[in-house]
Image 1 (tube, rainbow, N blue to C red):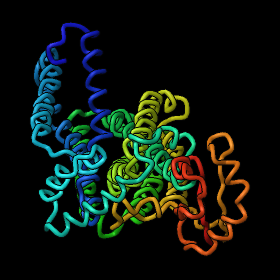
Image 2: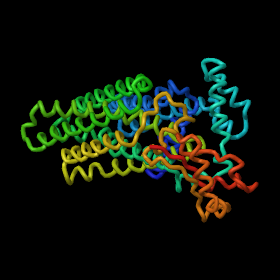
Image 3: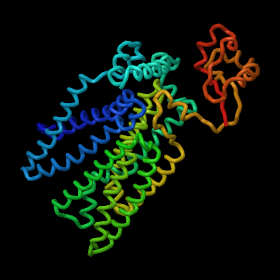
Length: 437
């Protein structure tokens, strides 16, 4: 793009770069989560957001330093310099180990063991993680033996709750308007009466430093305090900050004298907004989306959630100025504050704590524990060839199931209860439930 001779060339390069960024946003947290031990997974998986934030700050500084150059040269250097970290990432990928979970799915046991020995503190830890992953990878519903997208389109209760949670947190991450606030911060402060390029740059740098500091702080304490407390703190703090920004903007819009305290309030509110975003939604969205899905659905579930993320990001960024012209910047910030109040309620109700849990333990967190204490075998007549047999023996099976442990949603049926020799091959089309209060 730095050597582009025309707008069409730049647009094509931007599309290709956008595809690359989209892949990275999905793969980086997922890959990190699959390599990380449970006790440090929060910190390690939040590192992509840490470096995104540092990149934004670095971009502010570099762009300002290039602004004194001739215009035909400054933007080319700005785009060309971005190629340097991209080259570094490309070289780094060559020496990165493959995910041990992916290796086990592909039957490469020794390769998975070798990777785990490299990334674990002790051989015992590596062996323990290997056993957990092997158990998860030996299930009947893995990608090579079961249609994954069917599980997402017709999900069980735990998977449905995972989807709602992952899509919800990604939706609210971008509906918070954080990207738009960063993109259009200069316009907001120009409307507040700040027109000096030096002053606008200073505000951007202060905002970038605040954002970078708090995302690093959140990453360091994510595995100590947990996901829920930091997420609730961050979303509620954003609601308060956006309300304050709306108030400051409204006063500045209606006043001809532009009181200094309102300008200061707006600057502090913007910095607080991006800081609370960096405490909660910024790092935790990537962590949560990459860790909650079971092995067989992890890649597809995460990609679906992140697709929603990028779609909402594009819509908000493209409509922010247009909507702001209709309802003013103050009105827009009040709307965003309302969205963050809803986000806080959503996170409180739907998001269980995942701190310290292994990836293989996640499914149990999303099991429905509010159904009545009853056990039954339900089988879909249209999907299972053993439906007639199940329907006939449902009462006998139900009596036997009641004697089994009632703490799991999914349970195994002993062979002597199945009957037909070919029965086990068709249990994937049945829902085996043992629900509890």
